[in-house]
Length: 231
Image 1 (spheres, one colour):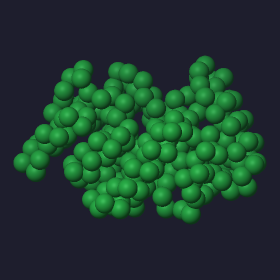
Image 2 (spheres, helix red, strand yellow):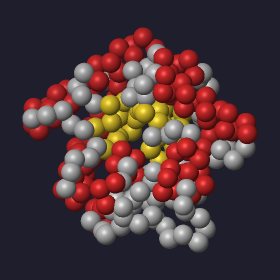
Image 3 (cartoon, one colour):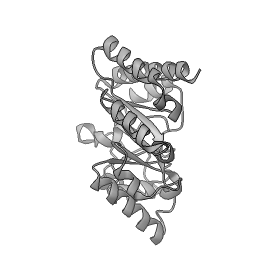
């Protein structure tokens, strides 16, 4: 059953991505959480091949898996993860920092993105928390992975994370979980895109309007891409 449900969710995600692309007027990607069962099944690879033939191009799609699931049954899992990338999809290590893996495991997995869990992000106000985050960000950059901070809830967190070199931000500070039609409506609003560059965030305080005003063509689009996705 999980194979069929997984295929349905991937197709619905791609339909949602197409709706968002139309609303924005430029292409955007979308992420889907997948399970180890799907990775071990040939059904996922058959479905991706079918989607490639139906849509004519590799989808702008990212699969997210937790760190522990990425290293389960390591050799077999890694072989299949490499196969997935051959279909043009990206891979993200989800919720990094909640498991028992070491930073060294990042050298084993063929991931493009490292998503830093809220448990680590919430400690950014302490010296030890900043040191751990700096180590994680540094290792991710050394392995040429983009970083996403999960669970960002305050402007201070957003500013500190951007100054530390985190590429993208995700959390209730920017948007709650919401239906695709509401998200599409947001994307067509006058406040899009937001400027979340460190320079812009540095001028935001408790009395400032939130979200930051539309800066036009000077927005950091690489970050904005992530902000409007459901958390």
